[in-house]
Length: 172
Image (cartoon, rainbow, N blue to C red; front, side, top):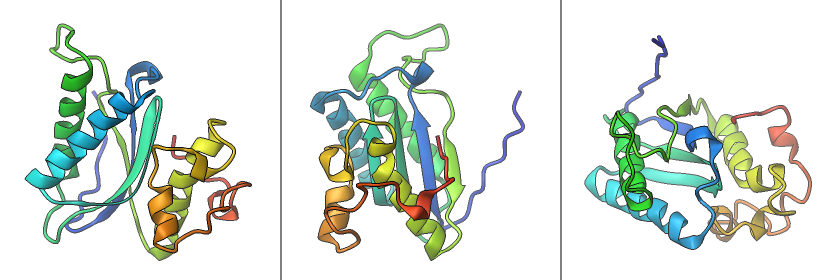
């Protein structure tokens, strides 16, 4: 049994990596991506949180959340999101009543400061290029990159080469 400890900080900002079971490429079309969008909307309505940045790739996703003041419970939110997506994608279950969509756990990193936040936002938006899915972040449809451009965080041409801010950063 794992003795993994999570960092729960009320009102915290966290970066997450969530992976499909056996890294199976599940999120490969608009219907599957819509299952994630729907699950996020449902959970954000039930228990508020803000998504600063997100990217969904075929077998994993990365995102940064801001939790409300006094609230540190991201684990329950992820449980509900993963359950909702799983129900929309698969009917079959195993002997533990799991639907075989997600790995059981997820990886989190508490954002420490503005520089750490920026590095992780850049990592998220550059990730489709890193995985050789596109040549530039703006070409990947399932990312918050275009919203970030509209907010003035990036120029549209950003990410044609690996940004210095993420050199050596590996959150897979």
